[in-house]
Image (tube, rainbow, N blue to C red; front, side, top):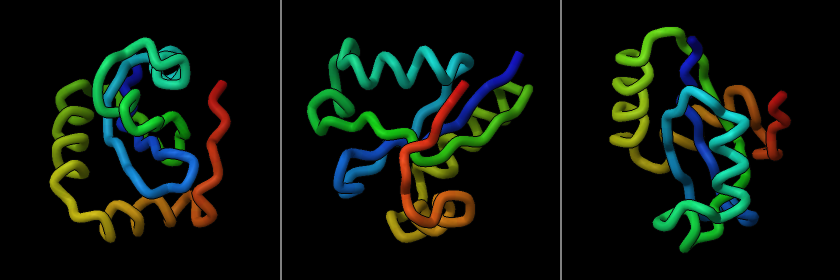
Length: 92
C-alpha cells in the first residue's frame, strides 16, 4: 500500500494545508467537492501543490507532523523544490 503526505492550497496560495492519506485521488476529490467539514472547506483549500509517497504509514504520519510543525517559509521552500510555480498538480 502507498501513503501520501500532501500539501493543498487555495487559489491565491495564501493558505497551506498538510495532510496524509492512502488514496490521494479520492482525498483531493473530497477536498474539491467540499464534502469534509472543517478547515479546508472554510478556507476553500482544494489545489494540490505538493505530495510525497511512502509505503510505511508510520513514516507518512511522522512526515506529516514534521511538515505541519514547520513555519510557512520552510513549507514554501519544500513546495518550490518540485513545484516552483505552485501550479496545481495532476494526479492519476
